[in-house]
Image 1: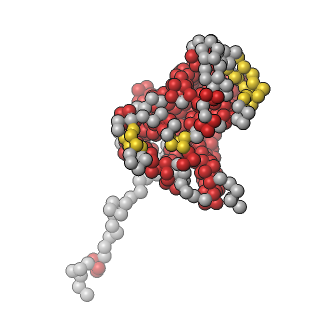
Image 2: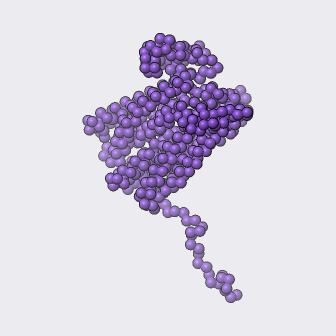
Image 3: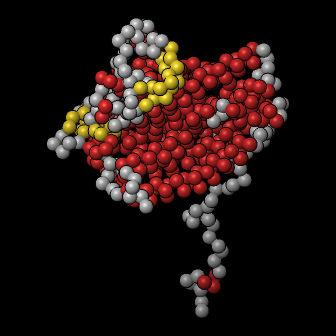
Length: 473
């Protein structure tokens, strides 16, 4: 029944599906780990119980999100061997070590201290527990560092040579790790993770303020979240602009697709706000434009010329409609976050941060927007890189494993069913935890649970004297 489908398209859709699920959880846990470190640090510094209660409240949610991120990441990595064997063979000498560094540094660091963070409060000293929380937070950042370095090398490959077998082999590891797009992508993605977490925390705080305006925990988390949005949202827009300029330099076709520039503009390019890109006709139908604004943004000159996709071989075009719209979703949500930040600053100035119900409703509505924005940004990045897996060097069409469509379709359907059941249940439980208001005396994941004794610690039962070796018959 799947013979009419293309195996390559199914493999691409399977990877997109699994990585989208996976990306949701690290984008939340990276920011939440840092938030937990801040909460515990504030508790140790000020002694205020509200910070400890919030730490324990969010620690349970972090444990679930972290676990689902690990599981979904393991599943995703197996597809390099099952569905993308040619890519693994060609790019493995570069990508493989970068992934291994992530495991040996970030994953080992997180795994080593996660148990203390989750279950050690009350069993180790406060300073040691805080050090464990910091170690987990640093570990999540290091994980992002290596994963984004590998992805960025695929976008802007440098520091390599090609051997007799046609494999990319490293020549300069410093150039590979710190490739031209990596610093911009790292900053942009980490800011996105912080915004995603901040908006969730702000949405949860807003939800409980709408129900009980005097809840101290809800007031503190909402105030912290709105303060973080006010700081990070404008920084993210600035980082995104710098990342866009870097992309224009190294991946011009991606920016052309983002802007909808099928034709070149020798005397200033318009900024197309909305429209319907037509890939076949090579035009954006019903376009709403601001004349020369794209040249102003990208070149800082109204009359600066900008090349279009008509200067590139059509076989090397990305699929413009997807890139065009995913980019607008990401940017639109970014400016919506900036608007929420401005409203929160106004409310704080007027002393109405905790009783302005319109602000609370808007914050609640914006709660999931960070997840949508990071997925839209990932789609822009990855679809904009097409038709290559290693930009300009290795095509996606030749990177896939020699599989038949029914085999790929069967695994894809299995992933869809299992993911929606397993991760749907996990997400539902997280939402259930978020639906409960924070309160004094909050319990963490370890509450009411004693350590499980191992066989070597469990006291042996009393031995009857009649059963000893020296006993008389």
